[in-house]
Image 1 (cartoon, rainbow, N blue to C red):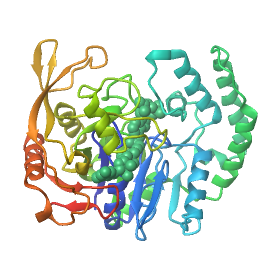
Image 2: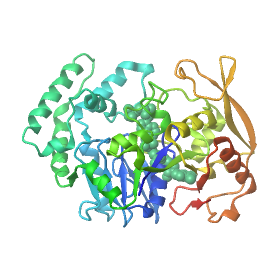
Image 3: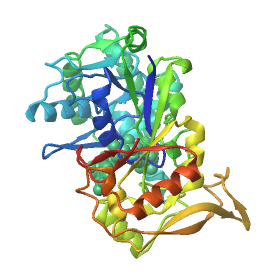
Image 4: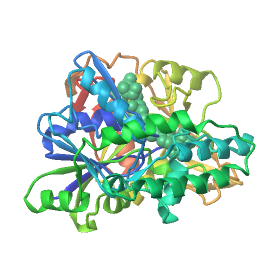
Length: 424
Ligand code: GDP
Ligand code: IMO
Ligand code: MG
């Protein structure tokens, strides 16, 4: 058995949560492998809506167990809030023993968030536009070998380690003109740590490999998107983890040879939230229209998402980096009603026509070279069968499949679980 990987190919918010929810009945285990509560994965079904930040999107499925992998960074306060919300809604993964956490996942401390905020404030206009969840500072402490791991909460020296790290953070914070009050946050943090002790911690790498060896199926759920990858994204306007397929190996402790299908999710257009380059951005009425129709406001921060046309050089790059074997196109319904749709096929990079993502995308903005494609006017939100797909949308699907040399196996036409068509 293999581990299938599902991840975003753009700048995040492609609809990963929804598609994991649709596909997870096929899997015994769903495992998040990187990122943290910077993610907001939205699921809608039976008239209900949930936004998950840390918990894998297989949590509502009866079959699958869910693992928060070692590559994830966990804010206990946010995790407690998520689990409490689920409990109130009648789902209690703790009671039903559906949620496990890898001991080697790192903890986000209140001071990590303060450092994130202080740093962003200092950068002013040049800021990353982070989600202010403490992601960058937590991964810095992980790679700097100072971090606290979830498994540490059961060890006798946890408080000593905590204090040592907080002291270090406070000495860094002295260099910023940044006011803060830690006491209140710490109180909630330690309450959440006590709550965390009620959730089973496992050696995630053994847990997943045992599943693989015993012939069970595993789905690795990515967060953010390929263009936010720490190594290959639009650096420095990226997140602090590997959002690509390779991240599933290090974020779960699985060998590359165990990877099976790689399912790449992309929107029928493109969005990004926060700062940084976005070649196909539409800073005009059309962009505004896409934002309005697509409800393009962040699931985690509520910020307006920047909107633009689909970007093929970026998608080709993402497909290459991830070894994508199949594609899922979401939000096709949002494009209904546009007479013309545009596709960025190449970039004009300082007068040169190129079809790849240049190194210095963050300093020299490539201009998109756009090709016009006929739009469709039919409302897609109620279609459930392939024969109901308008011809112009088929044309768009076939155009993209050919340009990207990868099959589109699912089409999403609305936020609800039921608004999904299997194409192949
Ligand atoms: P994720 O972070 O990749 O899981 O995506 P988000 O949940 O942050 O953002 C996707 C948003 O689009 C959510 O509000 C979803 O409910 C919604 N969504 C997902 N698929 C579709 C779709 O096909 N059509 C429409 N209109 N909305 C969708
Ligand atoms: P999901 O999983 C969209 C963006 C932030 C910022 C940059 C760095 O819901 O797709 P960070 O807080 O990670 O240090 O912020 O990355 N970002 C996301 N954008 N979707 C996400 O997650 C994101 N997680 C982080 O806006 O530009
Ligand atoms: Mg999201």
